[in-house]
Amino acid sequence: MKKLLLGTAALAMTATVAFAAGHGQTVRMGTEGAYPPYNFINDAGEVDGFERELGDELCARAELTCEWVKNDWDSIIPNLVSGNYDTIIAGMSITAERDEVIDFTQNYYPPTASAYVALSADADTMGGVVAAQTATIQAGHVAESGATVLEFATPEETVAAVRNGEADAVFADYDYLAPIVEASGGELMFVGDRVPLGGGVGMGLRETDTELRDKFDAAITSMKEDGSLNALLVKWFGEGVQTY
Image 1 (cartoon, rainbow, N blue to C red):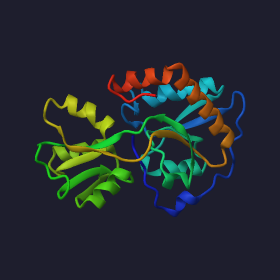
Image 2: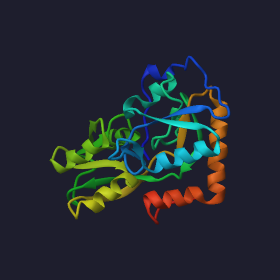
Image 3: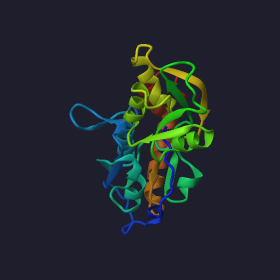
Image 4: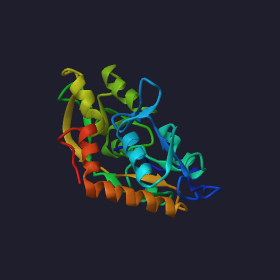
């Protein structure tokens, strides 16, 4: 799951209008739409993926009406705080740093690991150039590891940087990289050990929207209890995915 780093004063903003949750209330669901299989834009131009299916089901169980809003990753928290949408459901890990600015539901995806992918098994992931998406905890990890971090706005660009020789490796969520490696026909490969970072993935909300958070928490709990969340995880991430 993707993990956003917080570092700007803009994130300290508070929403001017608190969410008033109630039966039939419309909830604007903010997502990136560029991180399959978590979320992506399909051929019809609509938000699709694991989190689209999950979010629609959570809204149905909470008796809320969902509207989906696409937002670039690097501004996804500021635009939640400023009121451009009501939730973030975008592969975002729950971290203590982020929790100082926004609130979270319980996780709906268990903690997983990040990984390095390169064109050769001897790629230098500790001292070479490693691509990562900007404003992520993966980028921060690379910078602290001794490697040179090469940041890009989108996850697709990080993989392209390896293919075109700009970077020795890419560092990202294992679950994002796995289907890319499989589809590459041997061109790309995992190198080194997986690196556990952050916690599970949850929905982000404004700190004032406690009633809305409680509604989604209850819906997530019900999906865990009846097995439907596990079924979605397997559908979108395969039989080897960690489940509840």
